[in-house]
Length: 509
Ligand SMILES: [Zn+2]
Image 1: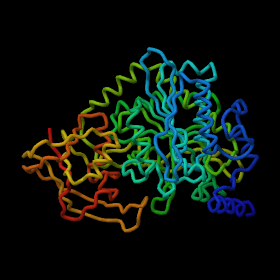
Image 2: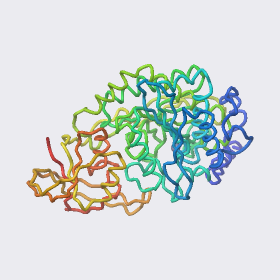
Image 3: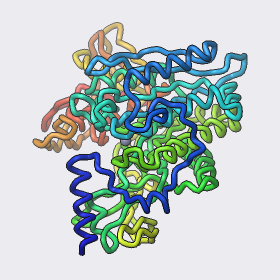
Image 4: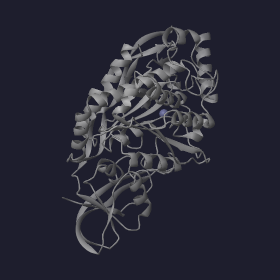
């Protein structure tokens, strides 16, 4: 029982102070040995303790630009809430080749410290390691290495106002979310990787195994199971990009798995696998017809433990995605083009498939890898619940300026009616309404059910029109269809009430 008490104490300390390393030295040595071949070339790797500061970040990037002036271009896309400049770095080898646009991001959660360091390491190697410098012949790379700079400097997950920037990608309530999304939309990548770290020692794991378990995977891949992401794009991502990266990690003895996280379901611990949520990067990017993955490295609360192993994991995944994109350049461009013109029904809501499955975990008592039988709720095998025909366009009342601004940031092209016009539309009437009094991410969520009626209606000059014949159509659908879980209505960005008619209308084909 001493051991149980010890483990509980670790869980409590780790959750209260967030700093105490919950991993024993023998686990590190036996199961997560470090990768000494990673060279000390980035700011944190050059020092014994601590992580990259803002000053070190700026100096490191400016050093890259100084040493490679024809390959590196630094810009600052805006300032954080605390007034720190957010760097955006473009890298390529200048030549006449058709390039693939790739986007890397680190540090969106400020306590996921190897995510920034790993991205900096990748940048350095692409410019200096001759085994990798040729990759930039075919790649136009854009990198945001420290997305949540305020959070990173405090080693906090959140932005300065307490918002989680990876839950804010449809409602766009944090200043940084607008800056980051605008930069993403302007760059318009074909491949996007968002690097994160996850917590291997979760409090709810203390109930599993004899005396608790921990997650064992060096890397978890999160790619979208959202049914509005065209199927060819989802399959191309999983069966080619994730598969190749996973094979490379296996060759390097780095354990990897599709993304899982725990959730309480009627008192039991279930494992959510994958994601469909447009508020988070993996799905949000995929909805703009981008090959997209969020890469989770095992690292939160581990300090500098296995730091080079975590950095090497990021390096291998990043370079694998670049190599896969180059090897399949023509097919990649075709898949994305096809996805843009994918005409189908809209899936407004969906449900996950639930099944039991085996999962490898680290047993904290024996410090051995064990296999548990767990219940999974799988987003990649989700099925549609509410389906609607794809409209030709949405009309939005001229008064809805805030929503229009958000749509523009999300990369939507918007037109305006130039004269009053009578148009047959579908209107949404709210027939069921519930508002959460408890806030989520500082918003009062609304849950609605609508009834759709056909109507001839005169729309005034100045009414906004959002056509769905555009690249980001699938993301537009997720924010405008009221019942969709991350829509402007669901997130309370567009307040409504029972029996109201929404200021959003559908024009059918
Ligand atoms: Zn994260």
